[in-house]
Structures are given as C-alpha cells and as structure tokens.
Amino acid sequence: MKEDTPIEEPLTEASVADKEVAPSKVDKESVGETPVKSGETIDIAVINCLDGFTRVVGLSNDPSPGYNIELEARKHSKETPLKFVELPYVVKGMDVSFSGLLTFIEDLTRRKDFVKDGQKKNEKQFTTADLCYSLQETIFAMLIEITERTMAHCGQNSVLIVGGVGCNKRLQGMMADMVCDRGGTLCAMDHRYCIDNGAMIAQAGMFGLQFGSEDMLVKMEDTECRQRFRTDQLEVVWRPKTRGQHS
Image (cartoon, rainbow, N blue to C red; front, side):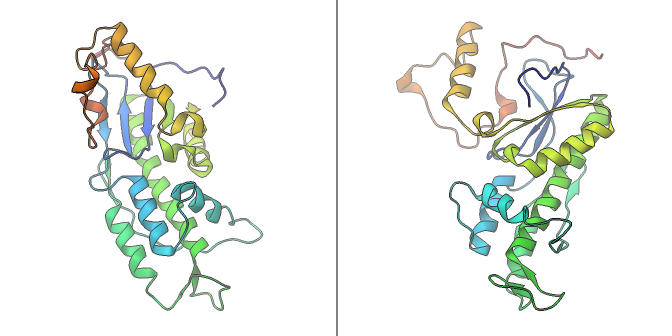
C-alpha cells in the first residue's frame, strides 16, 4: 500500500495472522465499541497450517515458513508451470477450515508419486514446489471468497490486509484482482507493518491511555499473557460508535 493511498471507512479487514482467529474478516461498517467478526477459522490458523506444512515437506522456517513456501511457489510461470495438486477446499458459510487440508497433504507426501528432491519423471509425480504452489492457491482462494462475500453482504468496496501472512505477494495479487473487479480499493502492506512489532503494541497502548480504557490501565506487575486472546474481545474506546449507521 502506498502511504498516500486514500481509503475511507467502512471497510473490510482481512486479518491473516498467527492468532487463533487468524483468517477472520472484520466488518467495520457496523462497528460499535468492538470489531464485528463476520468469519474466522474453525480450527487452526493459516500460519499454523503453513508451519505444519513446512515440517512435513522439510522446508526451513528461517526466516518464516510462509516466506519459504512463497519462494517455492514463485517457480510457477507460463514458461515452466508447476503442477496444481487438487487439495481440500473447505469453506463453511463465512468460516474456513485448514486442519483437514494439512492432514491431506501429509498423506500425499507418503505416496510414491511425491518427489521431494529432484526432477519429475512422469505427469503423475509432484514435487515440493508443486505442493507449495497448490497450497497457496487453495488457501488464498478460500480467504478471498469469504472476503468478497463480506464485501457484498455489507456493501463495502475497500479491503485492508493485515497479519503476518498478509505480506505474501501472491495473496495481495489475488485480493487486488478481486477488489479491482468490484471497483474497490486494496490496502496491502509489507512485513514492517504486517508482523507483530513494538510499534503496534505501543500505538494501541497509547490510544488506550488517551481514551481511558480500563482494560489497558494495568500495572506492570498485574499484566498477563493471553495466548488465545481474540481481537473482538477488546473494547476499542478510541473509535466512534457507528453501529447501525450505513452509507
């Protein structure tokens, strides 16, 4: 996203992060004091699926599993296309599921047609790069489907991608194509703003302090770590109430 990219609320936020509710879509048209979720994962988050996949096929997690999968998938081109391996596509209403997809891939890697290293000798065989390409295309298509459904349902035309997986150029490209077809605006960012960092935490804390959030006014010795904390459990006191208002 360019820094001067104009975007007006309401918008749809595609949150693709490493939390339990990672691939959730936030409808900000009806936001009151907390974001309103319109869909999420019903089992594991996107990053958990990608991390599990790298372990199965033997890819490195340095600097991140998603990045190394993306590099393998980039080997796909018109001149040298990778093989698309059909994988489970699980969209249930506004929610998605990834655990079955990961199990399916684990089973694929045990087949004799899987070539972990080296060249394919026939059309039935598939490589690690083929699986990386197929995994990306499948997961991202699922995310874009429920994002577009949220946009249509709420009458929105702007999408903001956040979260660590949001750095992926292929995801940004697929989302941009969908948003463009709807005559909308996409805001996508690089790793500086997608991954967890102190600036994000400090900004939220500063807003909480300025607007008197009781949840954020906690002494250091009373703080705690909530690993499964959901973003829709936070009282967003610094945003104006707009629930029930439609443009």
